[in-house]
Length: 270
Image: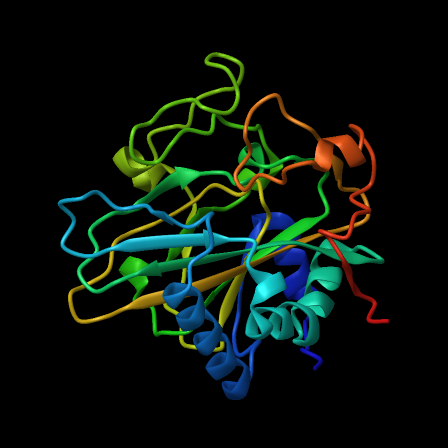
């Protein structure tokens, strides 16, 4: 499937680091993706985590890298308009699948997702990358993903665990700390959109983003699709990345292209 992407939207992605794409998935694709998420929730992988506190009245569940065993995920990741849109937004000739990430907040989940950048948690370097945040349920404005426009231009900021605020990735003091965005919201150019099923938000992996909890009458099932462009290379870490790719460092040296079966080329389609 093709998706009409304007030059203005591509320019906005390059400037702001995040854009809203209305109707990027068809109703049939949304239904397929919802089925895939429900199958994932019923049969979580060993990588699945509960990211909410025990006293939270709801439940926040995440899972990663499930596309190989989830046919619905593979269809969306490879055969929808997403690879084509990824190429256009990043300006890359080729697009590789990096990984999938399922995020479900059950009704009444209070646990917010704090402000962070994704790329410092990863094992990659490079600018040509994009993630898609795709809900299969309606998302209200106060529960949506928010961004600080322009933050994808850097710098890299310290990644910390969401619940305990620990620096388990880069050692303490090696990266700058995040600013207090929630305490000074008026000082930041914050972007966010209410979304309907079929809509998606595309964002750069260095864009600062966060989201809130959900109301007691709604469920928020979200699928994130992450893609890599031509300039992305492997950056092995001395610590466990999120997600981790066991054995990859033995196959791909530092600075090598992400040429591995874990990251198939999905654009152009062969």
